[in-house]
Image (cartoon, rainbow, N blue to C red; front, side, top):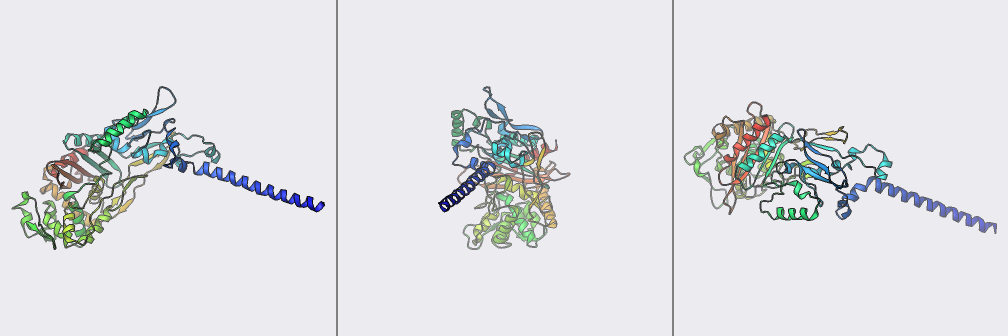
Length: 487
């Protein structure tokens, strides 16, 4: 009998130990899930409950130059908050929207910082995380300069273009000072707390062929026209040429294996581009198609240009804030000389975002370095304390300092005596015009990239407008924006 009791006691003890271990494991799992996986579970796309309480807390503001671009306002019932936006059509490419169903722009990139869930805001211990003690939403300070953003939007609207975009970078730091897009939209309208009103607004905007919800400065690609010749010229410099190297020109050029010849613009007939050979700086300033088509087809060739494009940032998304990245810019990698020639004059399969082309211009005034673009300068806690500051970082270096100096001289020649000479005397010191034909359309993609101001050129600008005419017509918009940065 004693042996039976002793055996039963051992079984009970084992059962108790196993049960205790299971309880401890369960508690550990609950602690892990609630303390460390809560955010991942909340963000899971299959979790519909993430949208149920999204307007019951006071999100932090998005700020630029001391102005609140986005903030939360309590509704009359005292139980909800609605997002409000300053001059939303002007700043929508920066803020994005925060609706009942989704969010974009900085509202999305810094969503958890704004609503207080970001670990960088956590000042409480593990117990507070477990019990769900709320943390005040933080403030997101952007790099955008409000006066210049307003000037860019107004100039794009006044241009009469069907669509347009402008980007300005601080070439030395990568800070995005301007990111404008037209046509735009009212973020407050799509952020309505009335689901039917918000759905109707989304339906109308999504049906608009001009894509007002799409940030054209960041998320759409266009053929860059002759502005891409900057990348081709950079590849020639990297291959050993100088701005004074004699390069092939001529009225027409037929790539090996090609059918139709690539010609210079009709307005160039009788000019320098007709000469059999001219200095690279002159071919660039006058935008000789035949020169750059030859470079793409023969020397330095497709591989060299593709490698230089990659160093400028092509072939990969460019992240400007956490999870907020660009569309991918591309130059065709191809063994076919005719396709490489066409791509080298910014036509064919070559595509780029306005952000990417501003990065191309920036390297010329930053010793050949392309800085990583960023849209957030500082993150602050709800009490105003500094949580994080942007740290400038080099993305890549497509040119040496010496080569960048020559590239800068070539861009200055464009304004001084080339296709951009209408900008002489303005705040634009150097640049490159570009006009891309759009098949079957009555308009062109009119580009200008450049830098200024004249006394201290540190701002790199890219402007795109869709309208009849030439790239030079986008140049005055660049000048207006640089003027506004100096105010």
